[in-house]
Image (cartoon, rainbow, N blue to C red; front, side, top):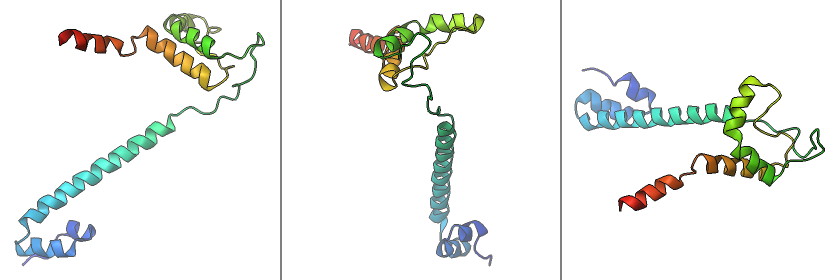
Length: 136
């Protein structure tokens, strides 16, 4: 008679390993396989979260300080920069002095305006809701 499988012992399932060796634990193998799949999925998700968090930007050292024109960009400047961002992106590819994002900003309100401007330009999901209403 064969002894318990090493995978079952490594997982801490000595009783399950004995049942497998005796031939009485056919369902236990399926349960162990399902558990291994859950553990694998959890490890992949945890790794993905760590990788994505590693891509998060750092602190903007220039936030709250005035730029070359003596102005700290706020909500309205962020909104404007978000609205013109697609055009600014194209120009910035050919001209190094043009940037899409104003680093001399007041923080959260500038960021909110910038994202609002981008969402206005790219639809912001309103088209999908309108399409859904027309189909009903």
